[in-house]
Structure formats: C-alpha cells, structure tokens
Length: 422
Image (cartoon, rainbow, N blue to C red; front, side):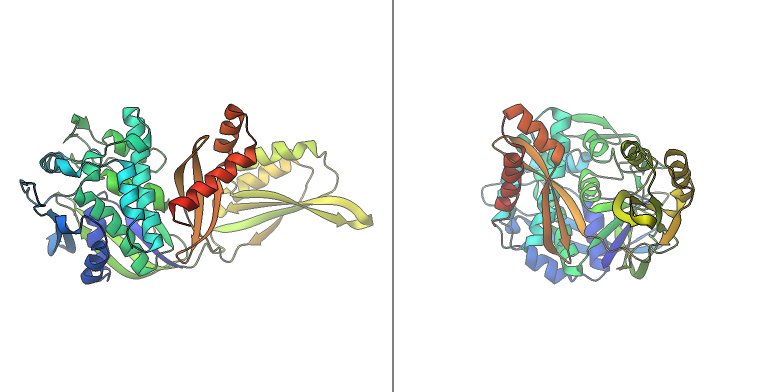
C-alpha cells in the first residue's frame, strides 16, 4: 500500500503540506489543472518557490489572492496560511476578503458540485467537517451553521482541496504522522489574542499526541491539525513495515532556530511484521461463560487490539471456546498475565502476524431526520468499500425519537451516500 509519514517536528500547515507534495513529485501543472475545477479558480494564483530553511532545501507554496470582479483586495505578504484561528497575517488577509466567508453548507455544495474525483471530494469534505465540528464546539454552534472566516477563505480552500488532490495523485492509501509540535505563546486571530494552541487546534488535537517545544510561534494551524485528525494514524517514528522511497520537505513561513519544514516520507507500507504484532490463543473447555465478558473488558482496557472467541470441540467431544487476542509485542506479557489470572487457561500459543493490510478510514458527520450521526467510511486503493453508522449515535437518537434503531442507521447511511451523489 502506498503511504506517507509526516514528521511534524516543526508543526504542520496547509502550505507546508502542498510544498512537500510538490517536492515529492506531484506535478504543479496537474495540481493547478485540478484546482481549476473549483468555482474560486479565478480568485487565486499558486506561487511555488524553492527555499532553504536552516540548510534544508524545501518547497514553499503561497496561495496569492487575485482581484475578483467588484472587490478590491489589500494583498498581504506571503504567509503560512492558517485556518479557523490562524495567525495575524491570515486574520488580516481574511478581513480584507470578506466575500470569502463561507459556511460548511456552502463549502460542501461547492465541492460536491465540482468535477473533482470522488476520493478528492470525500477527503476534502471530511477535513472541512472536522474543522466545522471543532469550531462549533468552541463557539457553541452546530457545524452546519459555522461561518469559517479564515478557513472559508480561498487560500485555505486551496490548501485543503490541494492536499486531497495530491493524495489522490500519489495513490496514498495510508497516512501516518508523528507527534505534532504546536508551538507556544499567543496568536492574533479573528476573535482577538488567543493562546497557542488556539481553541480550534486544541479541539482538533485533543486525541492526538502533541508537544509544545522550543518555539513561541503557532506551528500547527487548524488546517494542518484537521488533515492529521481526519486522515492520519499516530506513529512515534517510521512504522515497522514502511519502506521509504522519497523524502520531501514543505516549508513554512517562519525563520526559526529549527528548520521550519514539514518532512514527508513517501513509500510503501507493508503492514506490521512479526516484531510488532502477534495473536495469543488458548483453548478453554472448563470456564463459566459469564466470565468471558469481564475477561474481554480487562484485555481491551490493557491495550489488546482485538479479542474474540471461536466455538470449537476438544478431546472427548467437549464443546469449548478458542480465545484469541490480537496484540502489539509490547503488550504481550501484560495481556498473557490477564489471561492466566482471569481465565482457567494454563498455557498460550503465540502466533506471529506476518503482515496486516488496512483500509484507509475516515469519519463524517451526516444530518438525518432524527439528528446528527457519525458515519465511518473505509476505502481500499482509493475506492469506497464500506460505510457504517456509529452505533452509539443511532441508539441515542432511536431512544430519544421513539423509532426503530435500524431506521436511524438506514437514514444515516442513505444521507452519507446522498452526499456523494449516489
């Protein structure tokens, strides 16, 4: 599977991503050709330049806004384009382009009515939805009602859609990212002076490992944080099974003591090998079935990746269960201890997992007649293969509305496919 690893030691932003993709081999002409499919294509020009950051040769991409009919623009110097709560330059630029303020509904309609490839639409809509949810939580609004300000501006639309175009061009099926360096200090945004991380970034990164090292600047923008939150799996370093083919660097605006670049590894991910993952197995024919539920809970809480039982027959035709626990090597000893303490097993088989193939996954919020539901979509080699409605959301709405659970699930999946025009 084609994959990328994002080394975010100096943070991540939209233009850093675009710069890294271009240096990694995405043709600038192709990116521009695809961006022409947006209705805002006459409101910007893409300026790509080669720069050196602390001795590292990198690509810097600047989305420069052009004058649209009936509008006068005050052009700002090149800046590291931010999203919902960007830094001062982004906020001033957004203020100078008031016509660019858009709601989530506006942006979704723009993308869905475009002729962009379906995977590009899916990724771009998902990233904007993550931003809308984060901004809505910060300001107490429904995601659809959020007016994006900076993130609705043309430069951020280009950053997000451009990233989706580049992922599709390279055929990326898996995205990994390091811990995000958020920076520190304070930043000016549309709502005044905010601490770093700004509220939207804090919301977007609350479940992803972060740090705030060395620099009193905003290093991770909402656009960069949303891309990671939607598309990436955390990996402290290059994942086991990742074979690097190219290393590329996308530059940010700041001149820092550290290189202000995003390092992108492009290569093949062959899945976790024997050194990383295994299955613990035990055949059990003498345990009270009531104990299995508690055993499952203990194993999953301790870090098991999956737990399941399979009905089997043992000697003397005794019905039994084969307990299987998928685990990383680091948790193997702890999980074995739980099995020995909480079950009647006195021995385990350790089965190495030679490889693991994974679909790329994302979560999208959809509106149904009963309320909002999260849908999980999985894709393999750029093609949608499965959509499921979040059980807890559907159950909550079914109980509140007094309707069958399956009815809510069906409405959510239909809403998801309707958004894709299917």
